[in-house]
Image (cartoon, rainbow, N blue to C red; front, side):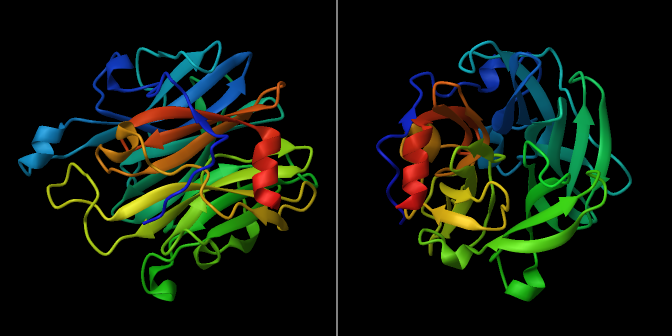
Amino acid sequence: MVTGGFSFVKRSSLNPILSKKDIPYPAELIFNAGVCKFQNKYVMCFRNDYGSTKEDFAAGRGRLQTNIGLAVSDDGLHWEAASKPVFEYHNADCRRAYDPRLSVIDGRCYLCFATDGDCGVCGGIAVTDDLEHFEVLYLSEPDNRNMVLFPEKIGGRFLRLDRPMPVYGTGGEFFDLWLSRSPDCRYWGEHKRLLRGKDIPFCNSKCGPAAPPVRTKAGWLTTFHAVEKLESNALKSWDPAGWNKLYTAGLMLLDADDPEKILGIAKTPLLVPEEAYETDGFRGSAIFPGGMILEDSGEVKIYYGSADTVECLATAHVDDLIAACLE
């Protein structure tokens, strides 16, 4: 089983920084949030699964509903949730929106999300100027998800990372991380596979985007998720049968002008599930970064979903993160 994690990455003493007790409407699992700075506030859009408890799942009657909530903060540490969910998505084919990611581009806040239904899993992109009204710009064909946008245009175009799910081509859950470009965030092309799971030393299954990249003096600092699939369902889970997918956070550095070029990949995971709030939950031993903020001080705030149950925070200095990619 994967072990590791860098000593210079420090978990917040406030963890979990957001959980169901902080939400003023029906809530059970608060995780996989997107975080950004927008209009002089720290802004978090989080996934909220609700409607069933751990006991319901143990009794075989667990069934969750999903919406996307909003929380704001003055310091990125202490959060206040809005009084109601901020975003839901329904149409004839899709029944919910989840796993939000946030990027601010040219002063507008873009929300990437996943959605699913009887047509499969799709990825969507919406934009807002006030965190109340969202215009959906794009919805992919199945099967694709985990979309994130670079926080600025390159060569006048939007750039996106995502994770298609080609089960026929790969013969299982061997999904990779892809990059594509768009003139307007509506029409996407120039698709290119950027990172393969088989090229990650701590991955034997799927990989894909995590938090949107941040620009540094050395290039685009970019997190990804990597999965080690275990032979037995030894991990804790609300499912009485257990769970066998260990999710860790990886880190790579992309060229500032041409993000198709990988300058370096950290040889070990950035974060590995260790704390009780990371190993015990709806799906235990799952760490999934969804937001990353580079402060003027050089501190990087890394926001991550933990055990598919709560939202957490870790910090590190940007120079240490860059060095880990270039070793």
